[in-house]
Length: 75
View (spheres, rainbow, N blue to C red):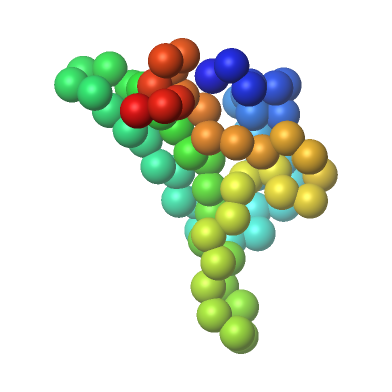
């Protein structure tokens, strides 16, 4: 993705998840045929007021986004 930052790479997201693991991991993968073209690293947080789908890395990064193959963003 053109907007990718170091905060969206596995080197950042995996340690964040291993440290905080605040909910149920719910990563969404988007495929075009056999090609992975999009990835949304998310988790489901359950609270007394309901459930929320949140990006992995929230609260420690200002740069959270879906990762996608260049050119797929507008599709």
